[in-house]
Image 1 (cartoon, rainbow, N blue to C red):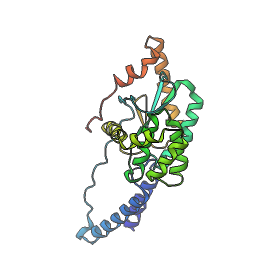
Image 2 (cartoon, rainbow, N blue to C red):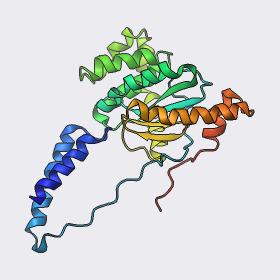
Image 3 (tube, rainbow, N blue to C red):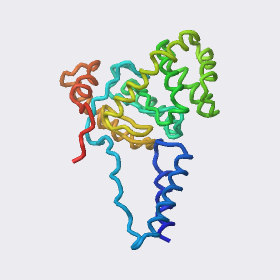
Image 4 (tube, rainbow, N blue to C red):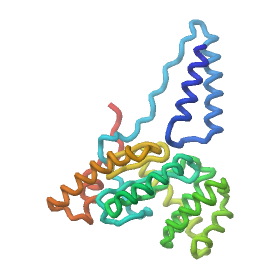
Length: 266
């Protein structure tokens, strides 16, 4: 009976998390491992369970983190008062699920919000090439076109192979030769650079969001985003009214004043 409860709890936690850190096969494998371990525990005298490891610490949602946005694709005005940095990948269903929410945010807030797309690959066998493809498209000013194609014709069709993605470059209106050169060249280190930055700030799964440096985890509903956006927009409007130039607001109040890395757990 106890084993059944533990397995149910483990399965619920794995499915309910609004974020990606492993594929379904890995979840099944982990549950099988849990089942075997429980059998071993119950076979011991007393059936005592070993001490569990502490969960990996993540960003504190009450604090502001200095998330750089240089050399990352962005949609929206560079002088927007609220910047949302999205840590995502193209093999994560929760990243796809939250896209309509971000579209609605753009409609509701207009020029006051920009969205920055920072790669964070958690399924390297499938999501690495798409991440590098966005870099290569970004180098040619075609990030939005490639992003749409990757969701519609890669994620939804589960065709993550490089040849298929290279074919989409032509459909996006890209110089195919340059695209392939960048894909196999600088775009690999580019992805790793931004993943390292996000990891340093405590990101461990996708999607994750920094709203003017404040962290929001997972594919949250629209009201959860709006709560943080409204708070940050109000602060920004007050600070601009007091003299902070609008075009340098994010740099001044987030990049320069925010935490540069995850603080150690106390």
